[in-house]
Amino acid sequence: MLQVSQLNLPVDHTDADLRAALLKRLGVKDATFTLKQRAIDARRGHVNFSYTLLVEVADEARVLKALKADTKVVVAPDETYLEVKVGQGGQGAAKQGRPVIVGTGPCGLFAGLLLARAGLKPILLERGKAAGDRARDVTGFWRRGWDFNPESNVQYGEGGAGTFSDGKLYTQIRDREHRIPWLLKEMVAAGAPEDILVKARPHIGTDRLIKVVRHVREEIISLGGEVRFGCRVKDVVIEKGVMRAVVLADGAVIEGSPIVFAVGHSSRDTFAMLHERGIPFDPKPFSVGVRIEHPQRLVDKMLFGKWAGHERLGSAPYKFVAHCETERSAYSFCMCPGGLVVAATSEPGMVVTNGMSSYARAEANANAGFMVEVGPQDYGQAHPLAGIEFQRQIERRAYEVGGSNYHAPAQLLGDFMAGRASTSQGTVKPSYEPGVVWSDLREVLPEGVIATLKEAIPRINKGMPGFDLEDAVLTAAETRSSAPVRIPRDPVSYECVSLKNFYPAGEGAGYAGGIISAAADGMRVAEAILRAR
Image (cartoon, rainbow, N blue to C red):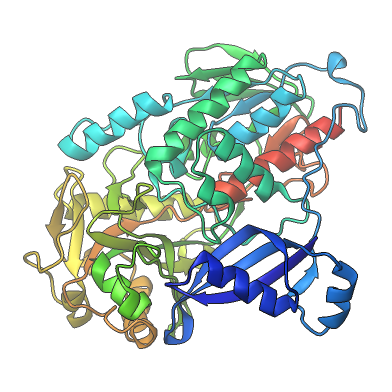
């Protein structure tokens, strides 16, 4: 089978046009093909679809020889994920206990799924609620603004932080083992739309993701595993350099062999507990900034030109990075076409923003994190967890400037650029709930972040004319781009470098940044556990 990539066609092409273009590219009269990937190419002022196809032809060797100079026509690579079996390098499952996994985000769920399918009957512990109950708590808080639940929110609960996001299923991580195609197929089997298998930038949306995580949980249980909600880990039991058990808030002690921590980037109390128990932490950079909102119709026009609004294209996404003279860069993060800006705090008395889209991406505004990287040099102290306190300081200021009632401070882009406080809404209605307070974001964000964002605007506008819309809305504070810490682990065994039987994994441990990369890291850890048995 051949793989043909970068086969470009106009937006309004037909299936017959696609077939004709393929036959012309290969110089053959007939071929059978299936779609592997479809991307929207909106660069250089033109909009095309770019296809990658898997093709069968009568005389493959002749075609390859004739097109040997065409690097986009090759033998189709084998992208089979090779599952790891129990006992491929260890003692056998019967001689060890049940694995315990702390956290049911994508990392914990897919680690649990692999271990359950291998017959190890893992126990998954989640401090928050199941996805459906969690969704009711989250939406209730957004609407009312006063009944915040510190154990059931955008950060804590089944599915992790990605449950209330755009549900992006693409990543830039290397994938030599082909975990990503396997993950996408598993998600489709669990109820995700089939188009995620072929879109170059697939997304699932919050409304579909809840169904997927519930299905994965049910399979783990059907295979003898357990998923327990409302189980916050408050301590661990360590004996002679080995983590033996976890201690829950209600005092229950649960032994595990091994113990995987897949707690996500916002489990600050868990990080503090582990640090107190002598677990090593390295501070790492992360990013802070705002959510920026434009009318989706304007973004469509910026990116798609005359094709804006075409049913084949949907809502336009964007991505940018601007390198500034402040010696920092500003970039887009978790861009949500046709989405909402949402309240995403995990602690009382703080305001945190994030972006969310449903599968349809049909809301009036586009939003994205407008971010600037910060690092240990900004934290003001050398403590390994100093980045967490740096986040908290910004989030507390956002809470206070927003009125101390979970409303968020917001500013019009024109006022932000002019250095004056905003006093009222312009033509863009902010989507953040429970509401915004018009403010001056210099009261919330560090000076270096403000300066970089301001310098970046005209640079971004050169590539996306209209981005500098004066009525665009900036809502603060966006602080949870990634964990500000990393727990060192062995690059082969994935075990903590200083503690046996303890496997730090996913975003909270500093080894992922998104749904797919977190799920893939959970798979890596599960594979290492299986090899060691």
